[in-house]
Length: 545
Ligand code: G6P
Ligand code: ZN
Figure 1 (cartoon, protein in one colour):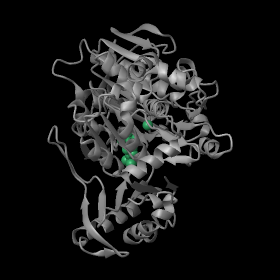
Figure 2 (cartoon, helix red, strand yellow; figure 1 turned 120 degrees about the vertical axis):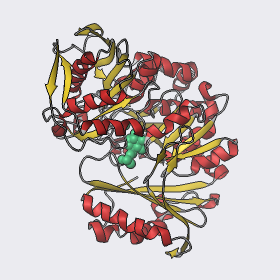
Figure 3 (cartoon, helix red, strand yellow; figure 1 turned 60 degrees about the vertical axis):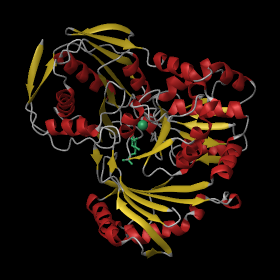
Figure 4 (tube, helix red, strand yellow; figure 1 turned 180 degrees about the vertical axis):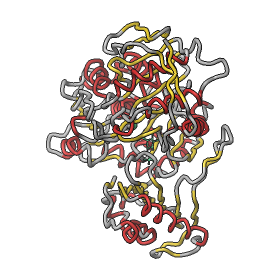
């Protein structure tokens, strides 16, 4: 039976870089989740309603995932959806959800994840809508969701018992069919189409060794099935491979701070040939060679330069894209390949139109995301498969691949300094202080470097003509060195200031420097110019990547 529940608008439901992210305790407030889900449905409802349509629902398995799924199912049934596909135990990695939406031609999907943010009752939860292309909703939809949330008065639900999402097969909620599906099968099948599993199996058999850190998060089942079972990697290749609602108390963010266990293994005496990690929902990747961390911006460039090593990309790339703060390393590869290179704002949703239009094949971000046109999300396990396809074909170590890459294209030294959980007012004052100086900056000298360009990045989408303003403050120096300042759109408490610093070095004799040393001059300029220390009281960044 369908019931209508009266409610009131709840403030603060504006989706950020990737959906709505809040503390679990915020989502647990009466009506909070339901208000947002109702706002999604209101914003995306087609003219004829949802009758006959299929929805995909899955999450990263974090705390509150299972409760949230039952609410989404009851609300979807009330909207008249014919069918919902749910990953078993409520689990679908974000790229797998994208894959399932596309494969079954669903109307869209609701993904329950707070990505790399911490989980558990005191941790974070998140929710976002992906459209029928499998990609995160564009800004005009997230704006419409928010708008509806500001004047919602009621929402509908079907009264029904909870669905046993542990049991694969058919279930019902009201008149709606709920099909609980294996979380891995469809995704694995797609990977088998893109990569040559026989070649990779032979590579592992020939002695290639790897560690994949699933960080107690969603990629565990995918990694076990693909790397160990299908490709024959030794048992134990996958570490921390059982998803846990609170990620075993860890922060499932694959960076050098939170994936320290893997990092230490890779720097140790018995390091395997290759190391990788993925985040809470399986869309990010961290790549570490024996004795060498590969920055995400460099990883994107290497994947672009060597993509033809995998069958799916053997014909070459249509084009590439990176988010604005991502280093320009991939631009150099694109220029050499003679393909287009696009610069988009931070957020995977901005790649969707370019991918749909066939303008790009590969894309990536400094925030440890790389992906291709196979789905409309970044994809951690895919990135690992492409990397090992390259290693299998080229028979070189990660270190040698990187050295050769820099010798060919030059090296873009790159770092990101994050100041987390800064008081919102202080963070705004830093940004306003920088912004106020931008108009008069060109031609001035900062720390001995002459400013060639300074602006607040705005993006004109070449496919649909939409414009996104205020996407990051850029200071570019003569010679191409760059400092970018941005406020994160994914945090849940206070504000996070991100400072991205980059310098190009053509000389191979200077490609072996420590990144922080190579960038020390620019880092000092970035600190002085922004007055972060004076305005926030923070003398050091919280995280350096
Ligand atoms: C999510 C998005 C990415 C984005 C990242 C960083 O993972 O999917 O596209 O790059 O967040 O966003 P932030 O706003 O925190 O810098
Ligand atoms: Zn993620």
